[in-house]
Length: 255
Picture: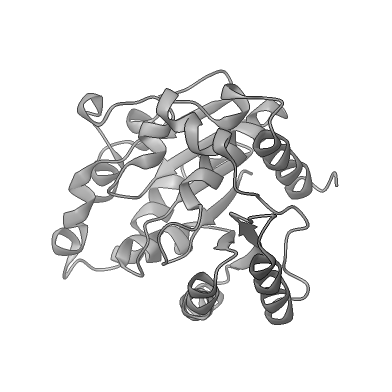
């Protein structure tokens, strides 16, 4: 059975989409069948893999709001990597689902029909604590929380943990588990000592839940989405590519 992992943090700009795209690419290059579900109305994971918003006819919005078969929403990127693209229509998801019974489990029900086809399903979550996040967490086995090496990102971490704890309690009642896969430190500026101070503060909060791999600031990581590619496909030998390949190995228990 495939493992479903939400890449989540309600703070924007911490590297959720970057991590989703590049970790998925690294897992695919390790031979793992990997599916990305873009749940952010900005559709950056979709664009970052070379799919223009104007070409998306069926999206994760349709998946959550219509009876459509999930198989009809999946687009292949390469032999081992696929995506369910996003749409700006997700901005209206709260109004669309208001009053709907069991609306937090829509994605879980759809995903249960296909997740055995994949080794990993990565959910790129929006920077919010809305019903979309609830759907992502209910559908997930675990959560990766990207945290930028910055004070405001650190401060927002506690809110994300509270949301995870809330969903954990609900899932436990149903006999399911949601765990924190790990906190991923991102955008480390190796020239700035403050970033290292933030690393120590996060380690104090989660001494046993920090990934060994730290993602540094990288021009290659920033540039790759312009070409609709992961950093691994854009600059395989770059530092950013190496770090995400190391993260994949760590996730697979090979590091």
